[in-house]
Every structure is written in structure tokens, then in C-alpha cells.
Length: 459
Image (cartoon, rainbow, N blue to C red):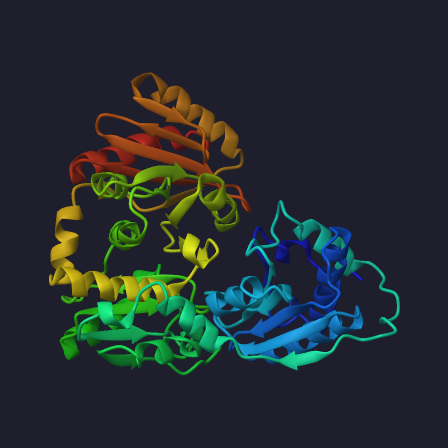
């Protein structure tokens, strides 16, 4: 049996629901995950694997096929049904009787996609450097007949325990009456967020709360500013204190202030980090190297020990315990908490925003205003047949004028005017440029200047 290699990605399995992500593949992924765990010496006797799904049209059938594959290997299944990625991760990591799990989801991808995320009981994903190649090879191989003693499927709810965990970190008593708009994007936020918000003294207007894997209103991807247009309008229409958006599997967020302005990802990270720091004063906190310099400055001023890190959630999830860090942020607005087993928790992120506004008594726009010190290019992609050659050329052109040089993730250079980062894509012949400067004029001039170097090597 063969499967297209391109669907086995850096952090998950993802492809077209029609033709690539099939029930046969789902069944084989279930069996392969069990076999991989056994090869690694994971004790499965008396334990079960969690299986969950998102709201896409094919997810229910794929979920059943995954469950059947696991059971045919003689391992029990704890089926939690429809779940956000944070709820699924909680189920995988907070119960000793669970040895990890598989969720059927394609995250923020459009409706024609589906896929699988495989998670260990540590919360670490199976990815490019942590078992994905083995999963591909195992899935393509011949399987023996099902085990003599098949695993059992048990339906389980973990929502009440999840709510207790979240409110153990931010209590309802720390939040004053506020008004907000939540855009669930027809994704999986509906599985957790309403239950949490109904316990708070807040007024909520929901947009697109009903899970619908065809995404009839807009793509569930808060990174794309155009997907936030309805949220921006609703915040102004309802006079809300802020707006909160989530992606399809509810592990990434977007934020809109009371004026309807989108809050930059670095500012979101800086402000939520301050709330985490109140719980863990003086701690190490991580930010990815594409983030604005303001993140480091804000955290340092509050007594944190900020450290820059490379991009990638699998790497960051491993780095958090290694560095004994309490929080990490990516420019994609994946936010990670040591209090949540070093995983994303969008519900906790929302509670931290509510707590911040309650504590400060200021509008969100006023909290953001002093953070607007620098001008960020955003990520600019260049097609490059030889990304390594492009990065070497830029380093050669700028090394002598740089104040700092780092190869933490591609090339990162600091200058008296700002910084730049050039990274190769993990999956395609592309280099990604991020650049920040003290003024808008310098930022635009430096983009043009660096682009001239790049154009010698890109097409």
C-alpha cells in the first residue's frame, strides 16, 4: 500500500479529503501509531489512546477508522468526540491512563482538507524529526491480522476537568463585567468556550459558533486579516471591549481592540506574557525570533528573563521544559503555557486577556499604544532554488555591519537600525524574510535593499 509522501508533513498528516486522506489511511495511521509506541517501549497494557475529531464533513468516518485501527492492535480507545486541539491535548497529557492520541483535523486549512495530529502523552507531537517517517513506512507496510483480543472503545468526557484546570489558573473572581465578541469561525471553539464564559460576569456576542466544516462564512485563520472583518465590525456595532477570534481547531487566536483595530501578534504576546509573569515572577519566557523587539523589552522591564527561540511548535514544546520557561509565543499566535503541560490553550489566553483588562481598568487600545515603537515588515516569501545560497549571500553582504549574528533559525542579524531574519522553508524552495526597524522609512528602505541582494538568487 502506498500513500503520497507530501501529506506526511513536519507536524502532522494533512491533505485533500477527497482522494488523499482516506478511511484506509486513517485505519493504517491508527495501527501504525500503536506499533510506533510499542517499538519505543511505551507501556500500553491497561492504558488507552485518545481519539477525537473536528467538524469537517469527513471527520466522523475517519475518526471511526482510526478507532478501528487502534482496537485491531489490541489497544483500548478513549473516544472524546468533537474536540478542540487544546481539549484533545489535555485529554492526552493529564490522565495517566492515556498513552497519547490522534485527532482528526486539518487545523485552519480550508474545507477541502483533512488530516491527523498524533500526540504523545508528554504533549509532544509526532513530526518530521520525531516519528513521522516511521508512521509513513508503517502505514505503507503489510499488517498482520487483527489482534486476538481487540481493544475496547469507551466514550469519555473530559470537559469538566479541563474547565477546572483553566479556572485553577485564572479564577472567575479576577474578572470584572466586560463585553466581548467571539468569532469561532465555525470551528471547534464551541466545544469549550461557551461553558467557560458562562461562568464569568461577561456579556458575549458570538459569531459563527456552530461547528461547520464547510466554513460557510470565512476561512478560520486569524492570521489572515481579511478573516477578521466581521469581528471588527461586530466589536464596533456592540460597543464591545474587545474581539477574540480562533482558528479551525481553536489552538491559535486573533485579537481586536475596542476600536475594531487588529492587535499585532507581538503585542498580544507581550501583554499576555505580562499576565503569566504575575503568576510566575522572574521566570524565563520564550519568543520566536520573528517577533518584534518590543516583546523582549516589555518582558525584561517586568522582571522576566526573555530568550529568543527558533520557529516551530514541536521545537518550542521541547524547549520549554529544557529552559524551565513558563510561557512561549510564536508570531503565528500559538501561545504555550508551562501550566498546561507546555501546550497551547486558547481558553486560558482569553481568560488572561479578560484578567488584564479587569486589572488595568484601561481600554485595550491604550495598553497597545505604547508598544508601537517599531515597524515590522511582516513575513515576505521569496522562491529560491537554493535557499542556503541565498542566506549565505545575505550574511556576506551584512555581516560586517551587524551588531549580532545568530544562526538559531536561518540567519538573524541585529543592527543599530533594527534586525532581520531570513529562514528557509521546511517544505518548499522558499526563503522567508522578516525585518523590523525604528522607523517606517528605514523599514521600507531595508526591505528594498535586502530584496536587491535576494533577487540575484531568487526567481
